[in-house]
Image (tube, rainbow, N blue to C red; front, top):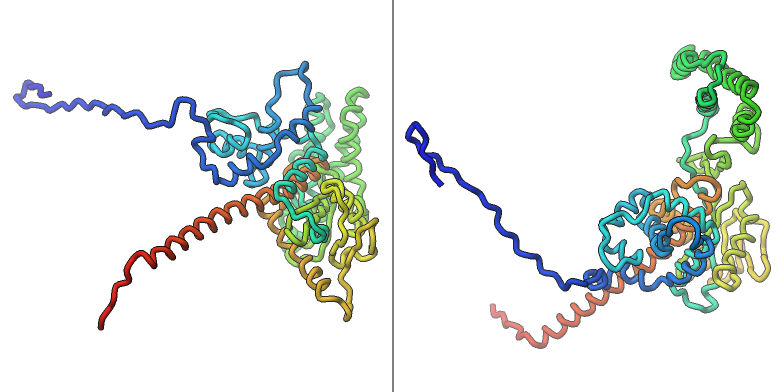
Length: 459
């Protein structure tokens, strides 16, 4: 279109029209996810291998038809827990990725694409607390069944080892805890409208500045003096808060105040020390590692089948027990999950002191010139549990536990073991698919050798 202006020039005005888009081809109006996805994908296969009705039957006792709004489907919540551990994601990430990934949705029981998020991330927290440790053991039992271990005498030969599940806490020092006590006492006083004699805000800031230069010349003495002063301030604020709190409010804050008093009174040589105010059950473990002398968390024990490498048991211990004392509970869990006893249990030298538990023989490596070659191989095979624990820590959220409390420790250990079992069978399906295509390719090459003439080359 051309328009003449007053200067006699013609301006070209192009009117751009958007091209009409052709409708995208679709399989049908009522096509579901089962028809659109790759049926050889490991998550697609796993969705059909897991017996979801087992969870519906076991967890329905935790719900009521007459109270509250309708709950989310049990299969959806269990699938989110499995995906969270298998993909090493947080609660927020797995909920976000569920709305973007069709395979996640099909694994959770959806038949059509759902654009929205399945639930609020905090609902996963409530669901974990609702089903508890027994529900997690049911998920672990289902992961063992999906792997279908061979039911023979060899599958009862197992290996057991322990490790430390570190908690998500900062490296504990006395000064950090004293400063947290001061901060929390200020918050309580402000919340309950209590006028303290002095808040020590500027004083603590000045003392913290002195502690920063403890490695300089003459700074060590001032840093020690500042540390003692901070402890005195924490105790002074705590005692003043106890005196001025009303009786009805004192009962509410009494557990916290007792914990603060325990931290202030503990000494270096005490055994049952508090290393974190928000995780007071955390223990300190010294395992002689050169790169990490102290680990703060809880002890976790794992039991794997020597023949298949499947994790047949996983248990958490809050107390600092000797390895030999953890073995009875681990073997009881193995019998509870697999409906049979372990005939031979191979352990390392940290389990010295126990030779037999019920019908299970415990084998600790000892100098023996007359040892059979079979038993020597089984002792060597026990070392295969070490890389298994390494994968659990690196890939399945066992290296740092973000779940709160003692129940969170138990849940994280069992879910990590179940996730590794599911990932094992998924890798086997992926390997079988690749091998089948390789066999087809080799067969085609073999046939082509006879169909195509081989050219003769003359020199």
